[in-house]
Image (cartoon, rainbow, N blue to C red; front, side):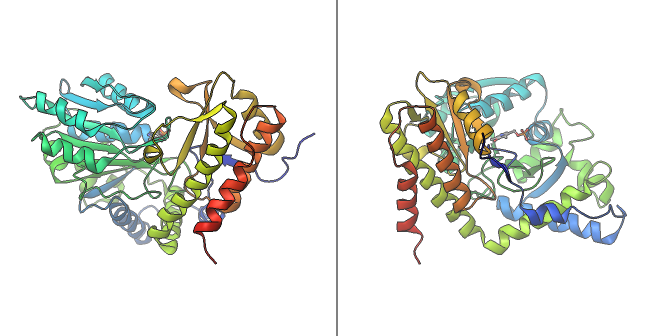
Length: 394
Ligand SMILES: *Cc1c(COP(=O)(O)O)cnc(C)c1O
């Protein structure tokens, strides 16, 4: 017996729920790729992406995913043999660093802890020790989707400046852009990257990179440049070259609608909606913790991000809970990732999310904990409602 008929709820941190109107925007024939309307669409998307990154710099759209964006960012500014510093705070910064190593870049990892954010003071200390300015770039992830941490990009940028280091600051915003505030130029970020399928509510398949002035300067001498990712090749007037070939028309239609939805709602409200719903999730987890089995992965509440919550399970396999939520109730939870594989589950709350989706997901998790006899504090959903009741006034 199941109670999962109807629409499946995706509570995984990407791909996320695609709004019906974004799906509908793709339901049309392909168009002439040389038509003025498609060229205008590209211009509007590039313009709006730079606004979303909050940069005066240029943005690029690639047919790719987050891994593609990583490679685009690296190859455009680095050369084989360059040294970079990767700031560990979960799986994703390490994987980005591994991609750099495979490209022939010398990678040093500033070791972190998967249960906390990057410590800006440690970044400053390491860079002060690099008296010869040998690091060409510092890589960090804004929100690490495996651990559920949010890193203080402002403070890390300030730490790099305080160390008088001229490394480029490169930031992955795949799990944060369009969900929480980000401001590339004001935060001293030289290269920022993202992808279409998480907070931006579009199908997987598009990668985005934005480059500031210092990055463009480094680009001139970058030896890792390749025809597909190269900024210079995409900078010209020819529309065809902006995608190194055929434009991803339907993904562009989808992205246009998704970006319009964000601006119709207003980014301030988008950020507030994420914060309120994330806190509702945290209120529930906080209650469940009382049973002694489930526990927040991120120890310091201030370092818990607003797009995904990673929940550890002590001496208890999360598999049956995930299987119950999905198989019986139609809610797909994220699995533990990296170090947390088999030890955690994740509840994503990013992109096209609202109160019934979040309360529904929490209700199903609480149902699953109960049905499987996993010790937990009762009333997590009630606590989530209590929080929303106080903060979403009539
Ligand atoms: C999902 C994710 C990626 C990888 O994106 P893909 O599209 O799966 O390649 C990279 N960084 C972060 C922070 C992510 O959340």
